[in-house]
Image 1: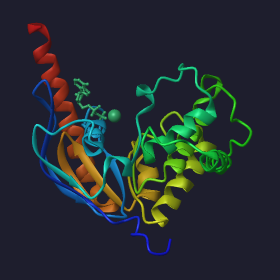
Image 2: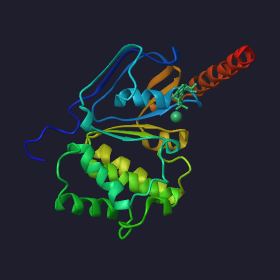
Image 3: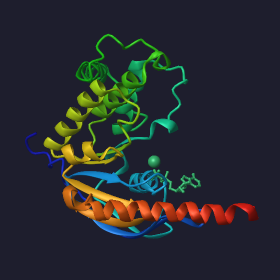
Length: 252
Ligand code: ADP
Ligand code: MG
C-alpha cells in the first residue's frame, strides 16, 4: 500500500494495570507491552481476567489503576466478543451483519456505498459463505456464524484485532479456516491478540503468549510462557480463588 503507514504503526503499553468489578480486582498490577505487528495469545484458567483485559485494551472498561497506552484509535480496533455475549436471535441478515464492519471503520454517519457492498460480498467468499447474504444470522450453525463475524472483521480492515475465544465450540474445519485468516492478518503486519484455551493451538500458531491468573504469570515466547511450571502456578492460583469463594459465600 504505497505511501500509507504500515499496519503495525502502534503497539500497546500496559503499566501497572488493575481492573476491578465493584472494587474486586479481576486483573491485578499487570505490566507489559504488546509489540506492533505481534501475534499474541492470552491464556489462563476460567475467571483469570482474560476477557476483562481484552475489554480494557479495547476501551470498554477503564482500569481502576495504571495505564493502557495504545497507538490505535477506537476505529482502528476490530473486536470479536466471546460467543456468550453475542445475541444471535437479533433478526438481521448475514449481509447486514458483515456491513456493520464498514460502519465501524469509518463512522456510523458515512453513507455505505456500492464499494462496501462489493467488499462485503468478497469478505463472505473469503470465509466460504458465498450466497449466504440474505440468510438471517439466527439460521446459521455456530461455525457459520463465526465465519460471518470474521467476514465483518475482514471488511473492517482494522490494524488491531482482538479476539475473545474465537474457536470455542467451533467445528474443526471452520477453526482451521479461521486460523488461516488470523495467520494472514499477522502476515499483513496487523497486531492480533486472541484469548485461547487450547494450548496446542497456541503453541502451533501464536509466537507470543501472555499467561494470567488475575496476576501476570508469564509473558513472552509461547514455549517459555507455557512451561509446565508456569501452567502449574496458574492452576494453583485458580484453586485459591475457589477457596475464597467457599469462605465468602455464607456471609451473603
Ligand atoms: P476469563 O475471561 O479469564 O474467564 P473474566 O475476565 O470474564 O475471566 O472474569 C474475571 C473475573 O471477573 C471473574 O471472577 C468474573 O466473575 C468477574 N467478572 C467478569 N465480568 C464481570 C462483571 N460484568 N461484573 C462482575 N464481575 C465480573
Ligand atoms: Mg472470558
